[in-house]
Image (cartoon, rainbow, N blue to C red):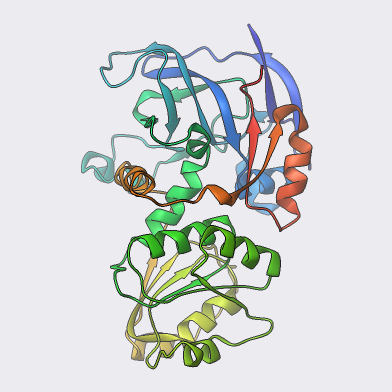
Length: 346
């Protein structure tokens, strides 16, 4: 049986919508009919064929990893799922054999393979997903929200890495994940939340998603001045670095309280320099963040949405998958939030 799929056809910029065979699942896998998928920044890198993509992706392959859909076939013994269930999935496929996997620390598996990166992905009418990676949706949460659980999970993992209640929080980078992180910080009881970027469009979207966040365009204002305006005297307790900008990271370091804690999700360039003496003498904690804690982060994500967290406005566009080029153009504009591709109409 044939299906539509969006693939990376060759080692060059661009993607292509093609007809290809529906996956044949192996033992321990589920065949999922995709309803909605979301475009990730990773997918944009693959589209553009940047250096990371050239070093990582092996065309031809189906890309994409953020989705929600329906199980249409299962192979293997499982009481947790059945045909007809609506599911999303953790995009990191782990080995199950290493020390961390055997200790239940699956997010620390050194042999992780990414769906849509190291194996065929979900930009297709049907996708093969390991049963151990599936997440059963909750009927109280709108289905489309599950198409963005992957990046929402990045935001949750980063925002909740350190105690947040009553803390002053600085977030650098107002992309969709940074904006969702701001909303999470507010939901769990942070005090002042300052979100910085150099894009007014991104900062305006942040205000729509989280009206109480203090937004700062650092082209026009310094963070130290913002601290004075809101009555802060010692610096930020928690920093969430989402931008991947060395300039933003260094300004964050300059504005942390002594003993402050920074969770870093943004990927810094190899030539980023920081004042190490500043970090050491101020006893700053740096914590790298990758992906989500499997599946503890997913549990927290669900609980927050069910207890009133509303991040729905982070979805700013929806396209039929036939119009995926428009969706990618929207993402590449630098002004969008999350973009959804609709596979359910067929």
